[in-house]
Length: 235
Image (tube, rainbow, N blue to C red; front, side, top):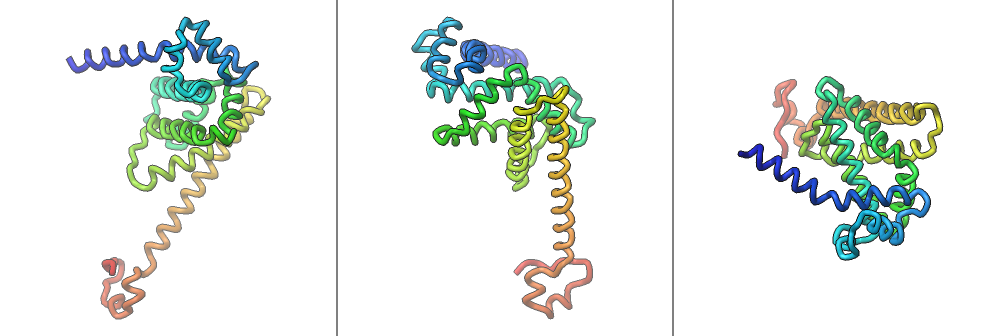
């Protein structure tokens, strides 16, 4: 019964998304030439058979909503593709590399539209939307590769990946190498740099753990009473 309900819910969500996806699909054929504009959105709605009232409901913020729909669609497609891969046998850096490469592969047929979307989101009025969409993408990547952290690392991981993904995306836009190997090499270098930094942080934490605590510094006698190899409690 639960499985049947879940399947029904999934079908309902997919059906609800179909008109939005239909408009998006139609719009992506025109965006490379005309950009993300109200006229493109209206023309796409007409091609998809969507009324003006429904268009306003589906894309309440006009072109901004269209860009968001494009990004969210790409995130969902990336998750779907990753679901077909055996991520459990991969190291974390390999999972992240695969996820970023998969996200780029999903939007590759719409590379010019993606370039237009990035330029659109760089405009001051759309900067906040750009940050939200970038966060959604990197959060989706971390969840898709199995990250379950809830501590401070939850935010640092996403901040670091946001830098990796956004710079890789910019490199991809200008990549004309065979098989876009320059982008793949760039991505691997960026992830290697991050992993090197993480190892450095681990060493720093290890060394700091060997230093006396604040209580021991403020109370030398207490430090002398503390057994070697143990930690004094905080102040």
